Image: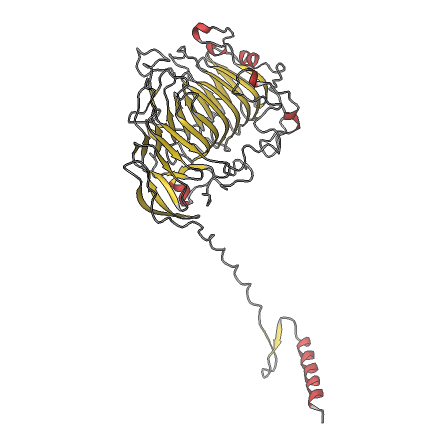
Length: 523
């Protein structure tokens, strides 16, 4: 008799031999006189997608108290992918200098048109109401017709930081309903001032005087701008994002992300991003405007629009179109019966990079018309599918400077390089293609209309850009920095645009404290 231990080994060996005799897909079933074939089970279904991220924001217990007697209205809560927030609605008119503080779990809401102060008229010197907005605050338009209007003689002080930019956006952005093509979901921001303008509403008014006023484009109720104070101060916007703006307010007329009307040199504008405006990235009607560090991404019309006698200096401008959307990079003034008014527009732009991705209704990446005086320095224009420059009307290319009519002469280009569709230049309304080409002057003054760009990461200068000799724009106006490079972004170490801006498929602007434009930050 085998001992139990040895017997177990023999039985195990025999069983192993039996299984080996069967195929890998067969199992012997005793008592049936044969084998039973059992198919392998179907592969298990894939696991469900992970749940959305846990909400990181919880609503504040209530709305803060502000100085204005009407106060904020507690409008309950709103929930989106980043959490649930307490909604604090601003009054229709802020009548007392007030501050919107940064409070965790609070969003501020524009319930419709919100006025900062009341209009103080074109000739007053007082400044009555200031709306202060702390770094990191988020304000959203609760309806399509929501917009913020800073009346003459009042100010906004929306000063964010690179680490805590201020965001103006739409309700759908809060709810997480937007994508990179969403546009036109609320009005925008309008600053009205008392600096000189043209194209007066009153036919008998003298342009550039206190009698010359205009109504904000698109507004139904009075929202006036204009005066005679070139140094007027409408406040400050710094480190600000304006997303998904441009709702049609009236008469098929839309607001821009940012609209200024008759603002003066006392107004400070810097580090401003417009994202997916359904109209222009920014439009400036008259006044005396200075702005540095402007990023316009995805505008559905033009990116930098200037009108009605504005005197403007812009430096460090980066504009990128969405594919198959948008119009021009620049639209300067309008051809009309008033384009001989003074002050005549004189806009000067230095250190810019324009990425034009489609054909335009304006037939070009840049349109100058209406007798405007315009100077461009240190620019890179990438417009391979459409013409680069169109000029309309002989007055716009007049080479004769005439102080009596505030005429500075023909448009000026210095160290501007362009990759253009064919033809590179377009003339209209009495101006020929050859005349536009001569005004640009490719081959002179470091200009080149047949440039081969080497930009990296879409907009950062490469070898061919950095080989171009820069023009010293500070020799034209003290507002400009003297730079040794053309374009908006010198190299990979030049990060002025990064951090405080939001990102999209249209343009990746690098590491961002606010993340994607389609989401809210949780700082």
